[in-house]
Length: 111
Image (cartoon, rainbow, N blue to C red; front, top):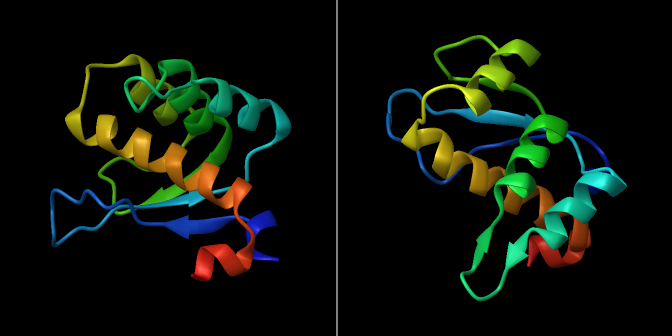
């Protein structure tokens, strides 16, 4: 069942058309899904830092096409280093993808 297994995801925002970034995502565990759901603010249609950073920390298990090799240390560097507009966009795309996979069945995702 695809919704319960890791999958590759290509964010919609790709600043370099010749080098597409893809992220290897695992499904959200209960804690991550709860933080994600409670981190949504319908008034601003946005997710909290706690939500997107938790999803990034817990659900990203690899990537390809990004300049730096994947590692847990590189993930921490991204979250605590100098702001990067690419990652600002990607963090929200990652959180949305993980949430979409968690709440929709395979039939709904296909449609």
